[in-house]
Length: 278
Image (cartoon, rainbow, N blue to C red):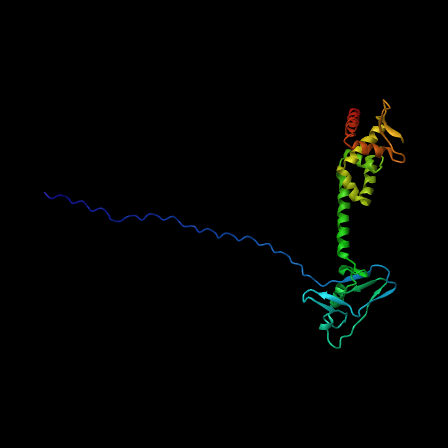
C-alpha cells in the first residue's frame, strides 16, 4: 500500500513590511538679525574764539607748523580752498592761501570744506591741541547734556505724579512747601521743583536728611520740640538737646545733630513720639 506523499511546504516567505521612512523636515535656520549701520557722513561744525576776538579776528597762517606723528616730522600747514591737503609740502606750486576770519567770535565750517575743518582741527591755537585762542562749539555734547536734563525732568515729574502723597510730604517739607494745603496744591508745587531742580528732587527721595528734617518739623508743630534761636529743647521738660551757634538755623542744626551717632537716639525718640500721635 503506497504511502500518501505530503505536499511540500511552501517555500515562499511573506516579506516583512518595512516601516515607512519619514523624512524629517530640515531645521529652519535661525533668522539673522540685520544690524543697521549708520554711514559716517560729513558734518558741519563751528569754532569760537575763547576770549575776546572783536568783530573780526584773522587767524594767523604764516609759519604755522604741527607735528605729524605718522611720519614723525614737523610740517607746515595753511588753508588753501582749492587744495586737498593742508600740508604745504603736499600742495601745488600755484596754491592760493585764504584767510580764516572769525566774525563776532565765530566761524562756521560747512561740510563741503573738509580742508578748512582739518586746518582748524590741526591748528596749534586750537584748545584741543593745547592752544588758548579758539575751540570747537561741541553741539553734540550740548545735545547730550540737554537730553540728560530732559530725562531727569521726566523722571522727577513721574515721581511727583506716581508717588503716594504720604511719601511726598517729607520731600515737600524739605523744599519748604507747606503740607497743610490740599494734595493737588502740594503736588503742583512739587511739580515746579521737578522742572527747575530735577536732580535735587530725585536725590531727596532716599535722603536721610529729608526724612530727618520732616520729623523735626513735625515734632516742632506737635510741641514735642521747642525750637529757639539759642537751642532746641524738649517741649515738656525744657531740657536742652542741642545748642544753636549764633547765626545758624535751629532746624538745620537739629537735623545735623540727629544724623550723628550721638543724636541718633534723640531722633529715634522723636519718631517714637510722632508714631504715638498717629
